[in-house]
Length: 452
Image (tube, rainbow, N blue to C red):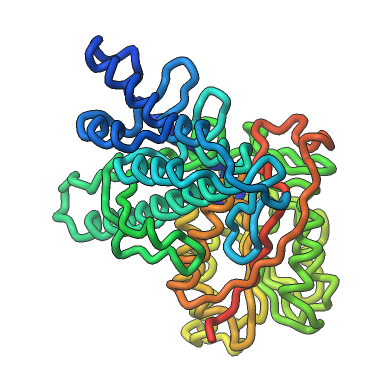
């Protein structure tokens, strides 16, 4: 799900493996029904599948392979035409297929839709570490892959609405009340969510989607939450910063992305720049090369701040370092702009960049919904490190679409530039890193502007 997307937004996709029933957990009669379910799904036998789904979960899995009914239906699909080798289309981030196939037959697509309608989960993992979308992508089944991406978008958008409702419910409740809206598995109709603007299939608009709430990828035992990250020491190596769990905070391979980001955001000298999250200083070094008029940097980790002092950032002309979390710093900057602190300087910016670590996606959303509009001057533009779900293609496609929808709703238009990323596994980039946070072949570089 969307990281209670992210940080640095170097968020990993965390598919849901949530105690779904298996063949070992049912009696003989039910076991026969389950076998018939999997057989019907594999053969795309809708007449047999519909009555069975009235009494059985669409999220059953085979205990031997770990495959769900969605995996099974996709595995049984046959391509009906060839397609050119291209992972996705720039316009809507949908898969184009590859040389192994193209569109699946209509029965396979209808079977996938039926399973989703009955609550099948879009990002369950099988024992090969593949979601149904991963399997469709590997098999080159373009239309089935797109169905899985659209299902993921609906689930994540709905989950975001649930979280907003939970916050309202918590804020309005009486003191002492512990009753909260639990965002556990629930089937909801997404009728109010329009995903067609980013390529979602219109014929799927009324399909209810099971919404699940896996842990934030930056708040698991493998990756820290923000308080843990800020209180723990960092390791500074020549080509990376690692936290105390050997998670990659920032790595030098990102330099190629930042070298393309900086000139797109700040194409001319003399601009007023605000960067949230210094890290290794990659993007700030590129911004400095543009001779900015002012260059404000917000950084929260004491080890990074100490290194910034050692490297002379505090003495650079035009650079202002703000120590602390951006949630605490930016309101003070906005107060200066409003003149309530007695300062004369108007702290508006032409360029803003956001790249933090160990934060959920909701933090990024709060940033562009509540803060950027008060900090970005007319004609300005801003961007962020777009790494949500980049440990697998289907999650990256889903999260790119979700953030695009949220940006649109907040009044921002976004232009994507695609940047090739080399095989980081092959080059040994992940040696010594606990978990690779980037596994896709292209980075979608966002440049955001006021709509209209």
